[in-house]
Amino acid sequence: MLKKLGDCLIDLLWNYFGVFVAVALLALAGTAGWTINGWRWEAKFATLQKDHAEETAAQSLAVISAIEQVRELEKQGNEIAARLIEVEAARKVLAKERDNAIKALTTGEPCLAAPVVRLLNDPVGSGVGLRLPPSSGNSSDPDTAPAADTVNTAYFATDTDVALWARNARDEHDACRARIDALRDFFQGRP
Image 1 (tube, rainbow, N blue to C red):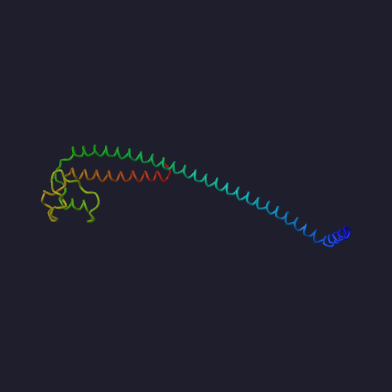
Image 2 (tube, rainbow, N blue to C red):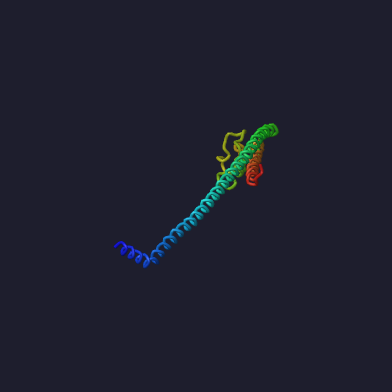
């Protein structure tokens, strides 16, 4: 009986040998495919990790470069602002000296009547712009003087007032020009 069982087993194995070989080959091929596919995906993942690391490094360098540029621009801006402050201070000292010289060289005599002062203070009626300083020779505001009053000397601007007004206009122009030059220097990259 053992012999018969052995013969039966051999017949069974022989008859299904092809099936066993096919299943074994399929298992071997599946394992090989799985392994090769794993290698391929590992290579892709490694490439992605490398690309990500390179991109992160490039972005970090770009941020560092941008920060350095901002610091350099800030330094240039501070230098220009400091120069502008020095120029403004020197301009104010010169303005004070010119005011004193103007007051010493002018007589304080009435020079412009109220309508002319009104026109100079507000040439377009907008209420903005440079205004003649209050006259040292009168206590009234020229804007409150009667419009037709061209003879009354109670409302006037003295030669000193006109000279100071002209000096003030010149100083305002010079200050504006200095600010524009500073902005131009900054945007042209000159310290």
